[in-house]
Length: 131
Image (tube, rainbow, N blue to C red; front, side, top):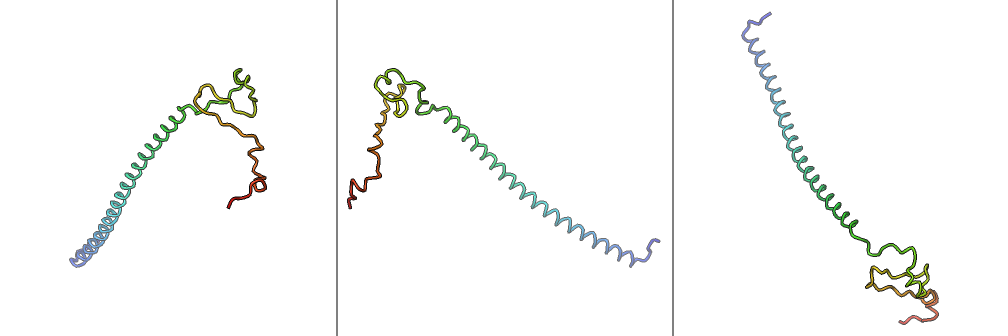
């Protein structure tokens, strides 16, 4: 049945307008919240993009360092498997002394002391402390 009473029609219209205003306000609030969330996500996206670029640059730098380390020859080559005849003739024993490498003629070799001269277990008896 259609309402013909003006007061009833106005009351229903006011109720509908009030309800629609409430819904519109809720939608505006939700929209503002979503806009704020979008701004936060854009900022986070830019931060992540910057961090990705920084990590990519750091990775490339580390790869270059690794390539340069691998490209450089080691200071001393692996020990020779057989003694050259010139050094064997000088009477150097194979197992306990270092043999100078021909590829590095300017490098001085260490002169190793016999184990008895390096033994410090009797130092306190042989040499009293100076204090």
